[in-house]
Amino acid sequence: MSENTNNHGAAYKVLSVRTNEDTRAQLEVLAQLNEHSVTEETRLALEHWVERCSPDPAALRLAEQVRDEIECEAETKRQAIAAVLGGSSGSSAKPPTRAARQPSPRAQLFSGSPT
Image (cartoon, rainbow, N blue to C red):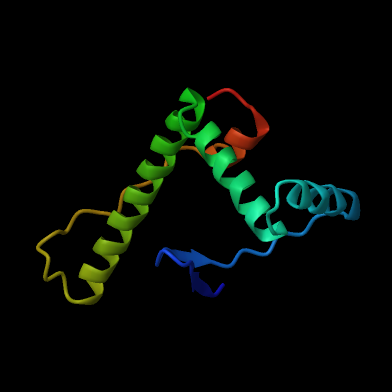
């Protein structure tokens, strides 16, 4: 992905989206009606989707689970680095183990499965 800036100095990263011809044609019509480019219309739609999903309690619970997974993985990596460097961090604890494998929180969010 490359990075661009708008006329206000905000940085944007390029995102390629694959869609079928019908959706693309509808998007082009909507962009024309709204006097936007297809890129701008897509960006606005994505921003709206993010705003709509962000306050959802299920999404918030899953975000917490994802954050916990990231923190657990980070701790495991910190301990691995400490072991490689000769244990200079003073921690001799074993890396944390993961609980039984469950569907990822992201998969649950998009499948609508209860948590």
